[in-house]
Length: 190
Image: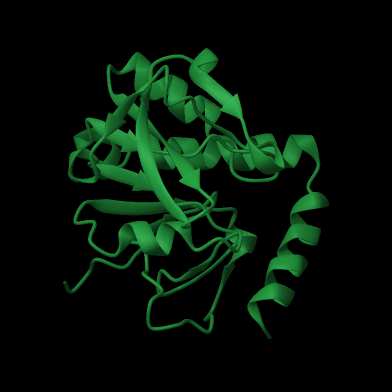
């Protein structure tokens, strides 16, 4: 099954989640993340501002601020499909861009170097048990992660994790996937 078909199937499944299921599953994922060594070690966390039906990242951003961590949010450049992160200190530093995405306003936030990011929470729609993912189709993260040496974790509902996905040579797997049921760790044996 091709990536586009898998994207559409997952979007359909996600749109069928009730608000109660979505909230409960997101909360379980938050608990897994907050108790992880990756979270505890990280001082600067890269994360997108989610939109339903992605795992809710607003509580993650708020928890980071409570713990005096820095939050860096990506800003995408559609012309060359590149991405940069900016330090977000308040939600009013966000602007709404294409497709209703909320990204940092570069005139109100400061740039964060890739090497400064301790942990990046990598979004996606469908994942496999090897750490590969199908994103939303822009390829921004695969480009950004090519020379990133920090930790990558994806947050997903268990139903988003499949046995195996077709992947390209340029696809970069994440280190871990945390779901509402378990954590898949791909760093074992490294």
